[in-house]
Image 1 (tube, one colour):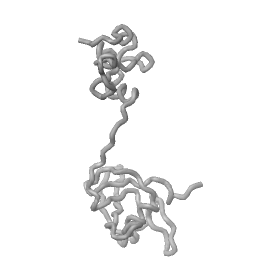
Image 2 (image 1 turned 45 degrees about the vertical axis):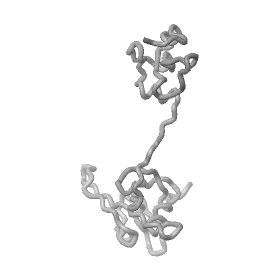
Image 3 (image 1 turned 180 degrees about the horizontal axis):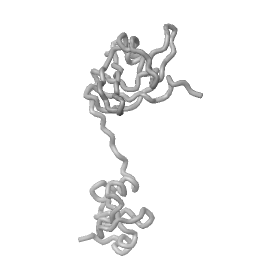
Image 4 (image 1 turned 90 degrees about the vertical axis):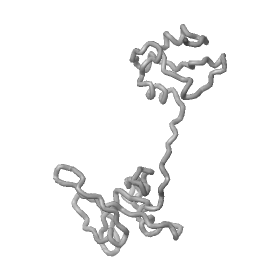
Amino acid sequence: MDSVLERSIVLSLNANWQVIGWRTPRETVIAMCGGAYGGTPPALAVSIEMDENGELTEAIPLKWDEWVKLPVRPQDLSIQTKSGPIRCPTVCVAPNFKHIPVKSIRLTKQAIIERDGGVCQYSGEKLPRSKLNIDHVIPQAKGGRDTWDNLVTCSKDINSMKGDKMNN
């Protein structure tokens, strides 16, 4: 069984509190202590408090020296250290990292179907995936390319009738 220290369970946020990924508790503790490379501004762990209804009541970013003083609650995972258990962080903030995460979505058949909601763009009919195809609005034979603007979800029947004609 792997240790809790090696699981990617810590939500990592940039300085604007936007999600930038996941870290392990080990990576988070290293980041809170100034990083592996020195000179890196320390990350902050977020102490999260909820009320009895599960509503967020406070989220306070804390430095390492404040974090280690927090009590370990029954719902918390903990890290056992020489001086006793420490609450395992679940959210951390990189205070000087302001980049906005950009995810590019790969151009795939599934991505086009999801974008179009499984609806044939010519008939407007929602169809099961087995009856859908991807059509080039400007056919490849006429110079059409594989781009987000030129690919649409289409009924297999309509696509076979359309062939390499342009849809007007």
